[in-house]
Image (cartoon, rainbow, N blue to C red; front, side, top):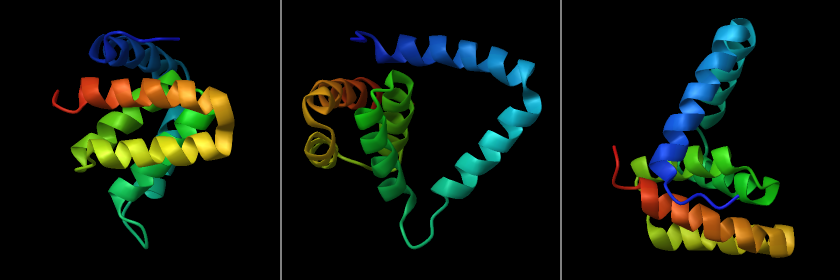
Length: 116
């Protein structure tokens, strides 16, 4: 899927995810706790963890992952060159489909980095 307005995509996805959280609140609570624990600074800082999550989103071809992790990486100070290197590693690990989703990830980063 090629998203043209990443902010609108995030808003739409937020609405859909709210319905899921309402329908399965205990699962959503557990997932939220997992996300918080997994992204907390430790041996790796939070920005590095978001860059890893973005790479996984690229190789898994997950549009929502691209949006949320590109935005989080930007909020944590990632720059465009770092995103491009993440795309490079993702292409190495995931081939042609990762090249396509890498382009989507870059568009997501560019579209979301200044919208806080």
